[in-house]
Every structure is written in structure tokens, then in C-alpha cells.
Amino acid sequence: MISALLGGTAAMRLAGKTYLPRWPNEEDGFYQNRLSTATLFPAFSRTVEVLSGKPFSRPVTWDEKIVPARIRDMFPDVDLQGTNLHSFLADICEEAMAYGLCGILVEHPPTKTGLTVAQERQQGLRPYLVKVAATSLLDYDSERVNGQETFMMLRFLEVVSERDPDNEFIVKEIEQVRVLNPGRWRIYREKRNDTDGALEWQLHDEGTTSLKKITFVPVYGDKRGFMNGRPPLAELAWLNVEHWQSRSDQQTILHVARVPVLFGKKLGDAPISVGAASAIMSEEDDADLRYVEHTGKAIEAGRTDILDLEEKMRQIGAELLVIKPGHRTVVQTLADNEAGTSALQRMVCDLTDAARLALQYLAEWIGESDGGHVTIFSDFGATTLAEASADFLVGMHKERALSDETLFNEIQRRGLISSELRWADEQVRIRAMPPPLPDKPTPSAAV
Image (cartoon, rainbow, N blue to C red):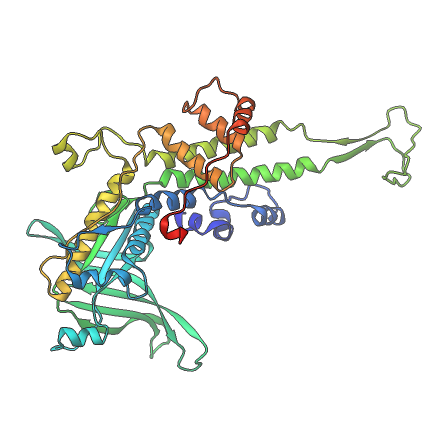
């Protein structure tokens, strides 16, 4: 469901009856028309994007005295694909926010033994980070080692691109399963059996690693246990599907209401011509010819239902920003100077811990004793639900998805401005305000 919502209208249409049921006795042609005209209100995907972007509205920072120089040198390209550390962690946060679970795999390309550090740098052989999506994870085994849950096996799906040996202009996307064990890795691909031609997963490649551990770090949205996370916005996803269905019903009834039905009785057997220059005559006393139109009550009820769903979705998204007094971190408990943390702030704390462990694995791959840590911005908790939801409304207004008057009314409804203010009076005050002063150019800009 989450993958379909993130895929937008096209993915929801492709899911068909899974999220847009076909009603009893509904003709297939009518259903296909209803499905092909349905459009998704992207509440879930937009909320995931906005919330996961808040911690990265400021750059990720680190102490150069703590993080080794060899690791800092990797930050501009942590995945060997041109992604810097800030963007990489932002992608991880968005994945964990959407699915409730994600992973950072610290890998090192196969190397020959006996190479010096200079030779490894010259050949570009260094550890790098890989994002493992929740939808790619297949299986794992773990054991308690020295009081810590430790991976003994990890299995996940990955896709690699390879040039077709028979055609240099074709690149094939190949699915393969990677199996990791402490000090060992294997890759399986689906191939045809030479005997009966049946497709089966066969060993494609394998090797060993110098580190006798699985350098995988899980990242959680709403942690429920080891390798067990729940999407923090799961209820929003369900409401978004309900909105998808309700909006389809609303489109259908609008179509019906906009096309009136011509009703006639006792008009005789002669052909009837309907038009601006036509007249229809009948000698019957009870003859009648008129258009039958929808009363509109169901339309208004459907519109109210959709607006209620949109408000509920805004509230659920905003709740992750609300500071809750019952949730406190260890540092806050010791300092006793904070009221609490929001759910998103706790996610950021977990992500910071995961990044620290990933840096430690990078350090172990290159022979450093300590990888240091990074700091992710987390001072964005809203003290009230009204304040948090207002932030979303302002964002919609900036994107021209809300009018000035609607924004004013919604902010007023949340009690953030006086209920005695009137939009018409406020417009007069706005027009009477002097224009804003231009920003003074900085010395460098003036030059």
C-alpha cells in the first residue's frame, strides 16, 4: 500500500481493485472508466517528504577533531555514486519514515591482500555506504553476542545493471539475492536448470571479507524491536487510500449530476427532435417533457467527507512534530530542562546513532580505531498540534495550493490569531501597510 501511495496516481491505478474496489453489479467498462479518471491526493507522499526533510533543512555537521580525516574525505561521495553524506542520510530518513525500516550497509570492494593505503587510494578501493530499502530485505538471523544483538545472516534483494553481451546498446536490469555471513558473502541469480530448463536460484559469485562481522545498520521509523519497525504514518496511509476511494465516488456522482436526464411521457409516437429551434406538441392532457436533475445533497455530503479526510490527514502528519511530555531522552532526563521530544525528534536521535555505527564500520574497514559521529538538526518540535498543522498550511500556501483567505480562516480556526479579526478588514490593513524595505546588499554583493 505504501509503495503504491508513493508511486502516485499511476501506481494506484495499476493496483486496480486492490485499493479501488469494483462495486457489486458494476459493469467492467464503467469501472475501468472510473479507475482511469481517478486521481490521487498525495497527502502521504507529501507528508513523508516534508517531515523527513525537516532534520535536513540544515547541513549535517561533525567535529573534525573527532572524525578521522580519511573518513571525512569520504563524505562528499559516501556511496561511490556521487552522493554526499547529508543527502545520503536524508534518503535513509525518508525511507524509514515511509516504511518504518531501512538499512545502511557498509561495503568494501574486493581487494588483493598486501596492498598499501596509497595503492588502495590509487585504485579507488575504499569502503562505502549502501542504502538497503525495506522492500528489499528478505531474511536475517541474529544471536546475542556479549549482550548485543548481532547479525549472523542477512539476505536481501538487489538490482544490478549489466551490458548485454549480445548487444552493446542494451543494458539489462538483473535481480540478484545477496547473502551475508560474518566474513563471507554470496550472490544468487535466477537461472535455468541445464537438465529440465526450470528457473531456479543458483550461486553466481562468492567471496570472503576481512571483517568477521556483518556491517549492516538498521534504521527505524517507529521501532518495535530488533529489525522490527512500524511506519510512523501508517494511519495516514490508510486515510489516503480512503480519500482515493471517496474522491473517485465524488467524481462519479459529479459526472452523473452534470448530465441531466430528459424525461417525457404521452408525447405520441412521432419522432421527437430536441433543440433550440424545435417544438414538441402533444394532445394529451398529462403530457410532460422535462429534464430530471440531481438534487445535489449527495454531492455536498461527499465534498464534506473529503474535506474531513484531508483535515484528519493534516492532523496525523502534524502529530509527529508535537512535543509530548512523556517522551524524554537520557540527556533530557539528566539535564531536566526540556519538556519532552516529538516522535520525529526521536527518529532523528535513532538515525544519529545509526550514522555513528556506520562511521565506526567505515573506521574498522580502513583500520581506524574510532569513526566519530555526526550531528543532525533536531530542534524543530512544535509545542501544540495547532502550531504544527499551521506549519503545513503555510507550506501549502507558499506552493499556491491555498488562497490567502483560506489560510487566514484556517489559522484563525486553530486559535493562533484573534477570532475577532475579519478577512475583509485585514485586507484593508494589508493594503495600507508600507512596502517592505529592500534588503541591504552585503559588501561582497555591492562589489
